[in-house]
Image (cartoon, rainbow, N blue to C red):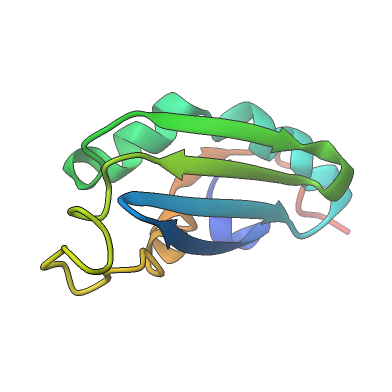
Length: 110
């Protein structure tokens, strides 16, 4: 079935200069493998489209059931230079949680 990531994860985001940092954390350990498989750097780049001008790096953190993404050239120069309303990239996490992924039908039961 297809669901939004928000059904199985929560997220946090912030900034380091012109790079937005987004962490996706599985709500349950059994959700992590599906998230790791479905939420690739390529899919994240496609999801954000023109909002992210540079590349995307993905880091796996299986010990806490999380993925961390660095979105380069995403903040219009950074907090002190940008004209964007979200100068620190706080809404990037909410946006990523809207991504749709495929999950096994039985994953959400129980």
